[in-house]
Structures are given as C-alpha cells and as structure tokens.
Image 1: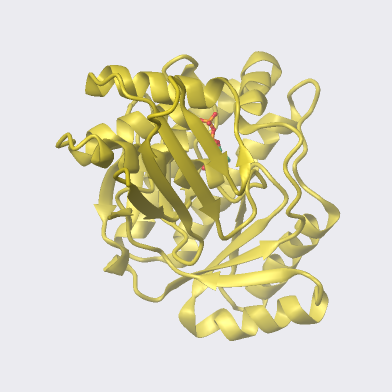
Image 2: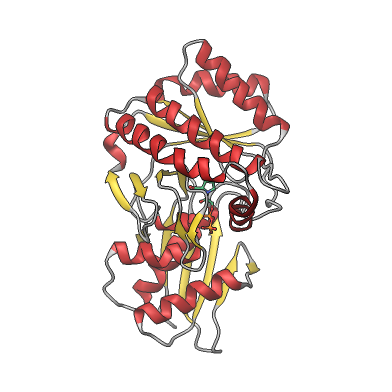
Length: 318
Ligand code: 2P0
C-alpha cells in the first residue's frame, strides 16, 4: 500500500480582512489580515503520490477539481521542494465549501502541510504557509492556530498568540444560505481593484483597523475589537458595492442578523458580527453571552443553522 499523509485543519476567519492583491501571480495580499481558526469546522485531506499518471488529482467532497488554481499550487510546490512527483489528494469539509466560510483557506493549508510531510522534507511552518498562500492567500493563516497575522505585502503568516490567549472568546456562525458563491473571491477582488471607486481608500484605511484590532486583541477587549472588525468588514463591502458591476454577497437574512446584533448591543450584549465573501454571518461574543445570543437568533430566525465555536489550534498532520 502506498504511503499516505492526513492533515486536519480549520478554516481561518479574518477579524480584520484581506481583500485585494498587490501581486496577482504570487498572490500577495494588499491588506493585512488578523484571523482565528474556527475550531469546530474541519477540513480533512489525505494525500499520496499518484503513481499511475503524470498528473495531480484533487478530489473535494467527492468531486474532481480541475483548474488553474490547483495546477499553480502543485507546480509551485514541486518547484519549491525540488521534487518531480505528482499527488493524489482527497479532501472533505464538515461545512459548506465555497460559500463564504473560508474553505479555500483550510483547503490549501491542509494540502500544503500534507504534501510537504509526504515528501519527507523538513519544511519550516513559514515555508508551508508560503506554499499554501500560492493556492489562496488566506490559506497562509490557519496552519499556526490561535491568533494569526498575515501582513500586507508578505508571502507568509505568523502567530501572534496561541488560542488560549482569550479563553472566553466564542464565535457563532449563522448559515444564511450554503449554496456555492456565484463569483469567486479571486475574481471579485480583481473586479474591485480594477473598477471600484473605493478600492484605494479601502486599502488605505485597512491598516488603521489592523492597529486598532491588534491593540484590542492584546487586551482581550471585545468592544474595541468589535469596532475595528465592523469598520474592516463594512469598508471591504463598500469597496465591492462601488465596483462595476457591483458585487453583493449579502442576502436579506444577512442584513436581518446584522440588525439583530445591533439590537443586542443596544441592550448591552456584546455581539459583534463580521462577514466574508458569502452571505453567512459570524458573531464574536463572550462565552457568558452565547445562550442569550443563540436564543435571540432562534426566536427571530428559527430556520437558520447556527454553530457555536471558539478559536482553534493549528494543523495536525499524521
Ligand atoms: C479573508 N476573504 O481575509 C478575506 C475576507 C474573504 C473576505 O480571504 O484569491 O479564498 O484565493 O487569495 O483567500 C477569501 O479569499 O482568495 C478571503 P484568493 P481567498 O479571509
């Protein structure tokens, strides 16, 4: 039986967002992102060498994946590790793929970690992060676990704090609609960079939100972090709305849940939402408020699926 390697990793939720590329070919982010792993969401990827043909095979949730992104990832990995083998990878997510739950972050991170281990080449985690980033820039983040920074202009991420830095922090994921998104993040970012009236000001303001976010994180101050998060995701979406054609990932229930978070905050409950390239809403809160927030969601949106999770560890490879 051929040797296999299994990697498990959680998707990376950005509190301060990466949106836009300095370098399309090398996938270098134009804005710094600050992120955590969503502990209870898991991508599991098993890789082996493909001994039967001279091509890479990638299967995700039972479907063969074709396309430029995977070719680019595997070719870059071969060249960086100086190997001439081809891979077969089988990956599954226990959450919806390509729906704004950062499946490409955990997907490429798991692939990079599993392939380097299979090649038996001692590879520092920063280098694995760099290999993952070629597939998806956000994939540079989840390998480390805890609270992670991917600086603008950088080709790899770094851990700022382990997951137990903030033991009370929780995340409630509200699934609004788990269909695959119609426009990929890569295409949406290109469209925004090319045509959005607000792209330059989004990039410019994002460093301020990062500094606010870093300070809040250092002191585990949810209100200050929430304000920085809110500016980050709202301004990211403003850049999308000002593109032509405009990009709109939100659905009516996304907006409803944003209003519910506002109402909860007005009532003194710290519920700070954020969103990504899809309609789902993720709410940051403290452990002591989770029941209240989950009950409010259940009352107003009984049909929406919610998942309670916390900042998670990094990749495991076996
Ligand atoms: C993030 N997102 O920081 C941001 C916020 C979505 C909104 O990273 O083109 O799949 O493959 O580098 O990483 C989603 O984009 O895009 C993303 P590519 P990716 O999490």
